[in-house]
Amino acid sequence: MKTYSIAVIPGDGIGPEVTREALGVLTAAEEVFGFQTRRTLYPYGSEHYLKTKEIFPDAAFEETKAHNAIYLGAIGDPRLPIGLIEYGIIAKMRFELDLYINLRPIKLYDESLCPLKDKKPEDVDMVIVRENTEDAYVGAHGFTHKGQHHEVATQTMVYTRIGVERAIRYAFELARTRKRKQVTLIDKANAVRAQDIWTRTFAIVAREFPDCKTDHAYIDAACMWMVKNPEWFDVAVTPNLFGDIITDLGAMIQGGMGIAASGNIHPGRVSLFEPIHGSAPKHAGKNTSSPIAAIMAASMMLEYLGEKQAAAAIDQVVGDLFRSKRLKGVQTGMHSCTEVGALVASELRAVAAKV
Image (tube, rainbow, N blue to C red; front, side):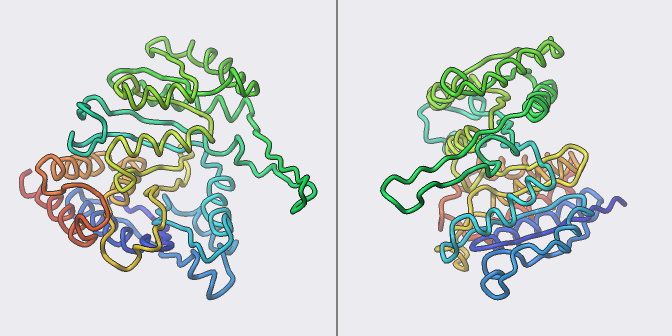
């Protein structure tokens, strides 16, 4: 029986609640599909920092590298300075583990979830490949005359040929596994001229994938078309900053932040999976937050680990629950957190009974 080691960081706010339910579904998947996970719980997050002044110790960080995957619930707390925990935990993992792909599936499970008029599941089924380690996020920023009337703030966007090419290549390889086999480059090279490196590299890599169709949209137009005609998109690849923005737009199209999950990936190495809704501290401890995004993050993790049948089954179960209206949505308070987790786990176990 295959065994996978998982580092689990439940984190802040609603993170522990949704993580608990996602792990319950993971346990059900193990029972049904015949594998095991060995989970190591790490307490790091805002509460831990407030108690100990410790963010993510080097020894613990080194331990995570030995796992097959890392699962993160959520981090962030308004009691702490902006970015302190975020940079100390998730950015640390993204950069120091070189998790150069942020993978965001945008999939509509039922028409009732979509805020767009007359859009159906067949219209919203795309994957955004966001470059995850460069752009304005590299930390090259500074302030001159800080706090004064003539203060100047700067932040540098950084793109490397290696970083751009590996993200674009990942997008084409992913597109080859999908029915439409189309890759759209989303950038703003007409105004941010440094992004011409994306334009040129995209054209070069595309020659290696003659079986894939290509398209291009500037980020402002892409946002417009995603709302008007989401069916135009299959796989899209984009720089870090624009990817951060457009993927949240995509999350709302698929039904809300409570559905959307992401993978922070370095192919072949330990990678990180998380829901993208944040810690929502005002809802913490109330059992009112949907764990669907957390469950889908666990499904993405299983897909990455090679347990594709289990991942597909979770995806199918969640979709069936929405289509049958047993799950009406993911808005806070619509269903209890524990109710949803138990329902998905129960339906997943029922899969075994039908086989």
